[in-house]
Structures are given as structure tokens and as C-alpha cells.
Length: 213
Image 1 (tube, rainbow, N blue to C red):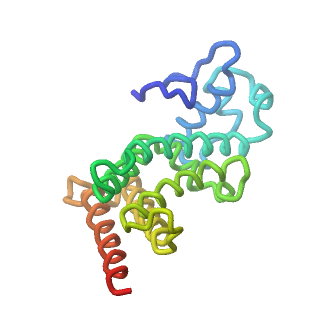
Image 2: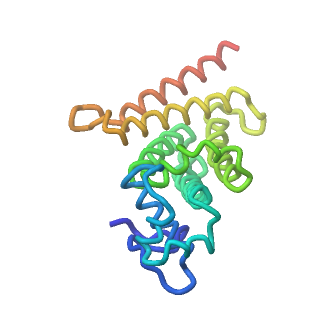
């Protein structure tokens, strides 16, 4: 059973008390996406799971995409918090802290498949004023981490930004393969180990480039 999360206002159950219908609908959407995928439910189904009429969600959301957008926004907010907690200001050293961020990335995707799908399947998220800001904050946190690892703090390093995107792309790929069942620790395909080794190779390559410049 998932613990209650303050970003969503509801626990694992989707029933709601007076005044919390919006949060209950978002929680219902999170569970439905986890069960069926991002295209696997309607507003009416979310309303049914909460126990309200099919018209009730329109008090808070213009349509299904609006609900998915809010789910993605809250997902990125929580995602950014998890990455920042793993980074922990780069303690005890930036490289070790960056590796923790990779572990936190995979842990988030595994524990919150509904949020993760809403965040990354919705192609409108990066350009939406409502959702794009929190998505950018998560990348900014990773960029600050690669700045520290490469010793480029305060220099607006293009190399650090490129490394951040490479690590994000790698982490996303491993997470998606893991969620789809293509990486199974029982078969010796440990997603955490795959990510850690590949990320270390990217960091080593970036550091070597600095030495030869």
C-alpha cells in the first residue's frame, strides 16, 4: 500500500471528504494510469472510482487532458523533491551524490508508475506554462549536480548541461525498459547496476574531455 503523499492530499483510497474532490480525482487518475497506462481511462471512470457523478469532475477540470496535466505537474514536483533529497547538496562528495540521484530516479519510476507515465508520455508537458516550470526545475537540479561533478560551478558550462541531458536520457531509458519488464534482476539484468555502470562511463568520458581540452 502506498503511503499518503502531501502533494496529492489523499491516501491509497480514492473516496473523498467534502471539499477535497479535486485531490481525490487526481489520486484516482494516478491509480488508473498505473493500472492501465496513460490512455487507459476517461474522466467518467475517474469520477466513478471516486464515487461521484460523471459531471462532477468538470467543476475542477476542463477535460481529461487538464486532469492529466495536473497529474504530471504534481508528479514533476514530487520527482524534483526526490532528486534533490538524493543529491543532498552534494554530500559527502558530488560524484557519490550524483550516483544516489540515479538510484532515486529508478526508485521513483518503480514506485510511482502512474505519475511517471503522466509526466513523460504527455508531449505537451515541456512547453506548457503550467507544467513545464516544475519539469525544468528537475533538470536544473541535475544540471547543478553535473556542474559540481565537473567542477564547473558558476561557469554555466555547456559540458555540464550536455552531461545532464545524457544522464537524464540514460535514466529514462533504463526506467522505461525496467517498467516494461525488459530488465529483470531475476535474470541478472539489474536496472540499478545497468544505470550505475553506464552513468559512470558518461561521467568518466566527460572528465577525460576536460583533461584534454
